[in-house]
Length: 102
Image (cartoon, rainbow, N blue to C red):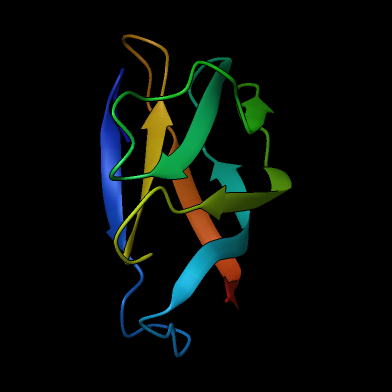
């Protein structure tokens, strides 16, 4: 990801995500950051990106954190991940995805 961007990650059809999923539970990991920064994970149907961070990282660090993203409405088919620092890049990995239903 590059400076101050958000990426929508389609989780539909991955890890057997059902249509009635109400939340996604996963590890968010930063890799190859070029400078300190933070990432925010949120449902893509949120009206604005939250200002709180799920993950704080430094240059060259590999940092992981468990994350839960709860849907706001509709189906839990996309997760947004935002990188909050201008002029910097970082790779974000989402792994060990599971969902909560009901």
